[in-house]
Image (cartoon, rainbow, N blue to C red; front, side, top):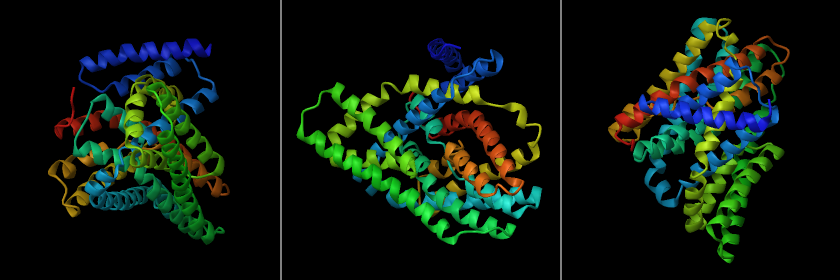
Length: 388
């Protein structure tokens, strides 16, 4: 199908379905995914691979940059300790719960360890899109926005250790040095790259006068550049773009604030294309092949997220709404989990469980992508932070 016609069809169908779901008091994100399912599965249209790559990278770059722009020194001083406690507790509990549920079903310890290590990753794009759709503001919204980006860093660490453990159990060669250097390079390389670009941009924008149009162009360019460079050198692109936003908002608050406002103006069509691309790529044929494992993984992950956020909220002495609803707002599964699943499959190419891991992560990302938007919506509304 002609790419221009396809883009127009996605935008029009997403808009129409979004209006319908809005009247039903449901988030429009479901409408965007549904439009992709209709175009891809019903009408049998497909998008070029490069289209999906560009849309996905651009969307995640902008979302991570926006998250970083929320990390002002004031915010970090107010929420930092609470955020760190909840982050660590929910990641560890999610890992343990998912590991336990998968092991109960499969009795396969290496598989359980790897799936448990991938489970804590939360999708920033899907979560931020729902919060934006609801015009959410408040403590729950702030801490959710912070955690959906930060938990990727811990997931990278847990995955590296889990892979070392799994390969040892399987009798394969496990590189201890790689298990230490990989997460360090991913995390600190990403933070260093984003921080360096952010410092340069903050300095540059202080020296010259920029109109709103100029700020808009520069903001888009540096976010996408940061994402691309991160992929080229093999560091965490999400952390790099978050560090970029954090550097900009703290070193040039005027540019950072205006940048956030301008980028927000284009995020609706970007989200329509992003979630439609996900909908078009869905393959429901895997569900009947491994539904018991899908259910056990999803249940374990959901229990871990909800219990972990609740316990983290208790330990950090957070507000009651954080303890009650944060877990529901953190259920969307991140694409980083699929990326790490591909790495796991490559590392375990001589074992059967490599293919199982990729199939399961792709399938459960679909499940959480469909179910999490209404749950996030429920959590935000019950917390009294929705403004629609």
